[in-house]
Length: 79
Image (cartoon, rainbow, N blue to C red; front, side, top):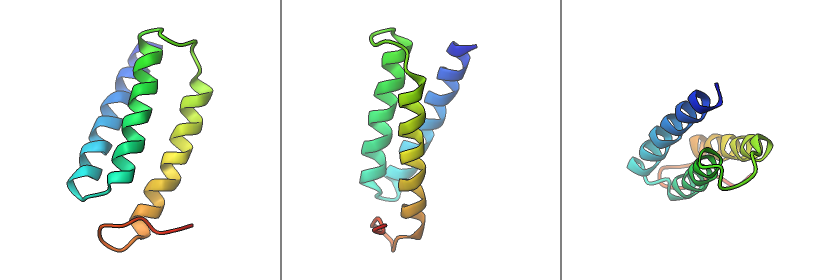
């Protein structure tokens, strides 16, 4: 179950990173890349499993994406 969930999450993150990059949201691309690295580390058992940290990072990413949706073209809105 965990392997399938990780693979699904990685696919979704990769799609989000590509979409953000295609519209110039570099901050979103960087954050998603960091999150991908965390999930890959969990998959490789390189770090102790910490889905709590991944969940926290996803919540922060959700806030960033919401801000990006409200921003003028090419930028991230503050707050």
